[in-house]
Amino acid sequence: MARYIIKRILYLIPVLIGVTLLVFFIMHLAPGNAAQIILGENATPDQIAALEKEMGLDQPVIVQYLRYLGGLLHGNLGNSYATGTSVTTEIMARFPYTVRLTFVAAVFSIILALPLGIIAAVRQNTWVDSASMVFSLIGVSMPIFWLALMLILVFSLKLGWFPVYGADSWKSIILPAVSLGFMNMASIARTTRSSMVETIRQDYIRTAYSKGLNEREVIMKHAFPNGMLPTITVIGLEIGQMLGGSVLTETVFAWPGVGRLLIQSINGRDTPTVMGCIILMTISFALVNLIVDLLYGVFDPRVRTMYR
Image 1 (cartoon, rainbow, N blue to C red):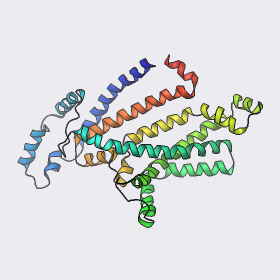
Image 2 (image 1 turned 120 degrees about the vertical axis):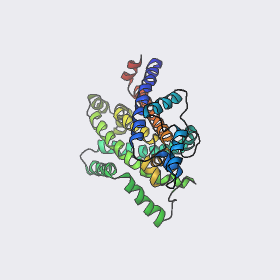
Image 3 (image 1 turned 30 degrees about the vertical axis):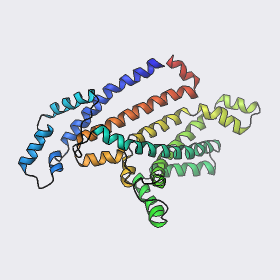
Image 4 (image 1 turned 135 degrees about the horizontal axis):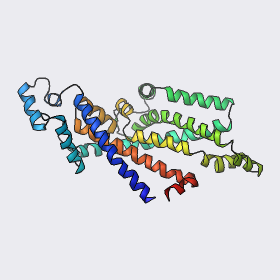
């Protein structure tokens, strides 16, 4: 098990290098000039050239990247072009907000999705199954920014129950979490339904019924644990994406998380901060996937033999 975990972590190193290389050159090709954005539209060419030299932006892009990579290998993400503060400090101030939003959204989606998927599978080809899948299809198809705007319109502007934006109180997280979790809930419910339909057709499920076990015991003790592997995969992917920064949700609700910081940094051509956000997203996604792989062994004893 330890050898497997170490191997997965080592695989992350070339992935990080490839991601940073790609993002760095994309940021270099993007239109705009970081020095001019910092100084404003009234800056003279001499002032822009002087700031570029001070920031090292006058050097070839490969030199800039190697210098950045050297700092990264020493744990230094650099300083923000916009604020001059450490990128690590900027990100760590925002990351707890993203973690909080991810946790609430994940709990919301899982609590709704698992019962919905299980009931749809058990009542397959009935109106309950059809209604559940139509509801899930709506969730998968609905643009998240549109749902966020509708939630603001109804529950903030019309009813006044929740704040429109910000993170000032516990109420502030409700609408962003519902908006983010609804789409994930739909994906998890559809996956749960598909895996459970396949599982309840297996011979050992019929054997469990033949032993006199009631439906609830068969579903929850036998079918559900064995049908959870695809669902765990989807849940892990969704959590990894949310931890990486829910860009649209955080932007619409002005939630002070990593996703909003990323958008602000892209608009300001703040390359070090963009790179730091992308690195955090990559690491978060990789670690969540590692945890998901390890959870396979909890639900399926056959998987545990692969780690030995």
